[in-house]
Image (cartoon, rainbow, N blue to C red; front, side, top):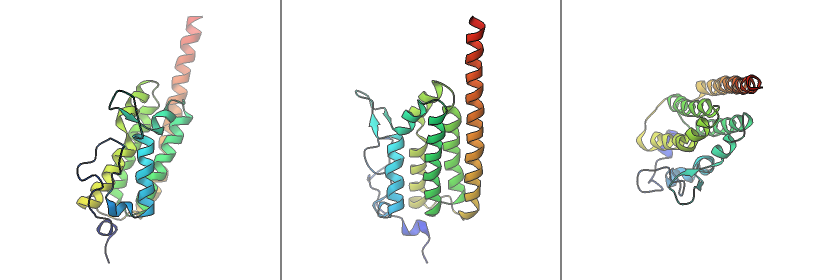
Length: 185
């Protein structure tokens, strides 16, 4: 029986190296034939590269827009990224690959809690799109082998820990701002 990566190999939908353009699918045509992976490709691009700042090549998505809402926006964005990773895991992503993806989302979420700097970082880092590129690499180049089931619990635990860290950083930032205003009066 073929492995998930063997079943989902195929010619690249872009005929070359995928970039952060957001204009076309990143996964191969064969992978896009699988409904869950087509959904992952479409929503990853919606979250990170769907829109372009006029007059520039800089792309952004709903993840950047959600990041403009203090606290809640980053939590929602992290939750959406977690759903994408869980879907990729259900479609055969190995534990090693999932850990790399969690690292991308974790870094994005952690830095995203810092006012202004986090938004600028989010505009250029694009964790979901990076994860999509990792998934394509996994299927096309057969990297990151291993079973996925033991890692599913780690995904939930990691997301809970990251959410807790985000709340702590957000509360610390609010307290620091409040102290500045109180010191000024």
